[in-house]
Length: 102
Image (cartoon, rainbow, N blue to C red; front, side, top):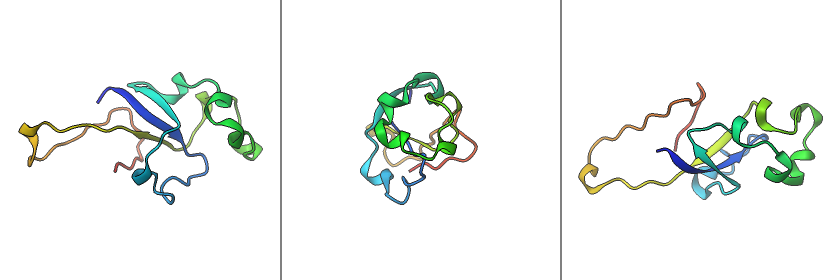
């Protein structure tokens, strides 16, 4: 599923409680395969004022090269008619050891 995905940081860990898996993430687009550390360099353009109001211990750098935390990726895809009703496996390479997929 390489290509364009929607992406959003979740430094305050609110996405699951706010059910972003239902409402979607719409902050930024990212091309996969890649990583946010390599793609997004300027948090001022990405996160806006709310990120800079975070406690100092949560903001160690102005880019994402050292960010350790949750990021949400979202993409829609269509299953071909020939695969409907069959078991389908999605393999995610380069995903953190602890991931949730909806």
